[in-house]
Length: 292
Ligand code: HXC
Ligand code: NAP
Image (cartoon, rainbow, N blue to C red; front, side, top):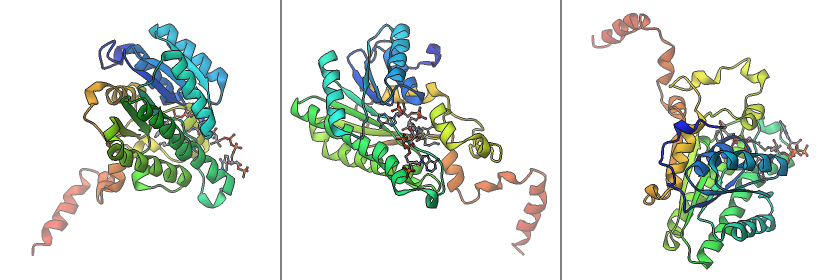
């Protein structure tokens, strides 16, 4: 649970919102759910494991005093998504916002992946997000309601990345859907934005992407210019702004929150961090000689 003193927006700012968070039982989804709930929103968290989402729902409700509805749903199945959406409407009467947060991922050389292993990630991330966007979009358009979709992608949705290729492909697809529908469905008052986080420790991600055998060999924090990983309240505060009406003019954006990590990898000379200050004396002399 995030420390409530670190929540940025004022209490009750989301009191008219009914927000569905896929994968809201664990990790970053749980932190966003807790943050939105403490800001007055009614929440529904979806996931495949009923016990996990029910426990999280109780824990958040007990802290915020606001209703949290747990709905078991495998977002890969469109009928399950429609049924889950109907349960949310039955409970709250309407829904204003969808957070596409559920994901599957694991680190692996691509040539070691079976056809099914590749598909499983595409199905959860790309097809699952598409299923939710279509079901919510149709509901909002049919009922002439305003809608807001926030998708959690990754920095490598834009750059691509080896060793997580199915995830990169799927997240790139989610980013493309978000940017496309931000324009096409603006006429229905439905807006779309994405957050691309860098490293935010969660059990789900760390067990699958940075297992001990890998982190014994590589210090991932060294890749991050700010020298640390993200804290959950930092992402949850950004998400609460994008879910709130304060961001009503934001549409089609991708916001990266990664401590500068991807830019460090992209900048041609950024690796010169490894040169010590006194070594620059000799290097400078040599460079100055170029004039003559
Ligand atoms: C190679 C693997 C594998 C591995 C599974 N498979 N793990 N192949 N290396 N490490 C293969 C299996 O052998 C099988 O293929 C296929 O993948 C499906 O595996 P199942 O275990 O049957 O699937 P399932 O039970 O549905 O589980 C799905 C899952 C699992 C994605 C594999 O990890 C999961 O439930 N994940 C949900 C949560 C999650 O992943 N969270 C992390 C998100 S982090 P075969 O052919 O053998 O049948 C994230 C962060 C990004 O996205 C950026 C971070 C900086
Ligand atoms: P996590 O705790 O493993 O969250 C993933 C959630 O998705 C789980 O609650 C899982 O619950 C749910 N889920 C998976 N498959 C599903 C399905 N078919 N239907 C419904 N729910 C499903 O990992 P996390 O780190 O918090 O990740 C959250 C989001 O942040 C993901 O989109 C991830 O790609 C993104 N992200 C994370 C990081 C990071 O550093 N943590 C960095 C970049 C992006 P069940 O298994 O019970 O269904």
